[in-house]
Image (cartoon, rainbow, N blue to C red):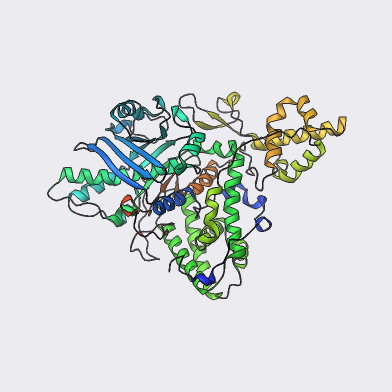
Length: 587
């Protein structure tokens, strides 16, 4: 049963109003382990982008495909949207095996690409060919919106080409272990290396005016290129026997991604944006819980989605012991969920359901169920997709009384005040940027060099210091305006702006001490990736994770066809729930 199959009369007739009174509290939602348990959901950026591509019938046309018999060369795709023309330009390279690496210090990749405004003429293409393959070492202009690079899957790419060249389709069983042909190692936007900045993109390129829309489209196009490249290679290797890959298999391929610590500081440096994303997600969930009709059709659809999610988790290949254990536990708990639903067909409300989940099942299971519930009611959630942007201004409120600010800190930052910063463990880590690549790294205090160059990610400790100075100032001088305190303590101005700004938001800062010796950066990575729409998390350490994007999504050939928007939690086509496979090592 489709998530859209319930009868119209069973749905809410109108979009609900204010749901702030039913939003979950920040103490629950902004807890870092819970943020690190989030799954993709209906308003994740990939889902929103694909809905837009399909509903607006974007035109994706290959205008240049000059690849040699080894698959190396140049490809250009022209993208036509209701608002303009764009070009995706890709360069496929030979890379010596010893120089291929996912690490940010790599300087050679199997393919590099950029997304540009307008059409690309010969002069522009020459400039791109000279600079795009260099990535950070090159320089491009503001006609480019995104810059990226990717490496082939060592196991999948050659396997797929050989199968097609031999006249066979690749096996789903093999593809389930590594669900992509290429894996991106960086996707740059927002003005880096001379590209168009966010202000220009948002104002002039409305097709990509939502957060990370251009970056997600870049990944979608790398996926498209990879599918066409293997078809090309198979035909060149064995023109007499080669077959084209079936569309159903193409849809099962995603684009891989390797994400490290470079993403983590973003969540700290952009608290207003993260607070908005979380608030929109929680608003969508609150609307469903409060206004979503409960009837047998919706309950049946939920059971289908739960069953699909269980199989999706079974098909995740990871060597990470902790992640595998989490997946196994979640699968087991989802089985209990199905049994519970079967014995409680008279569910009175979704609030009753989520309350029961909170009492009986782990946070991974809870958050997955929340994502699935949002799938049931697009009419209650999808209007929120245009509210993910926010103007990030962190302003000092000089006229506020210091006593009022102290009360606000104790109300909104009680989590930070509860941390014992006198313990060695609470200050056991520091973040810094590497000299070689200017990428974030995590060091151990009093062990690793570079602590004197630490990045300012110590929000919790800064709040503690600010609170203690305010309390001392009030005790010694009495109450006053924040302006006077800021004049006497100029080093506190930055954290004062942050506290005063974030205290006015629903969710505020992430409730975590990122300086703790046991800080788990992968929670930050997974939180952000869930908003991107990433699935199949495969942690390689506590510092970086491999994952899959766009698996199950429509391919370019599907544009213009009916679209069900049901590609969340993709599983192998034809796979029956309950079957398993050998997971093996992820590529």
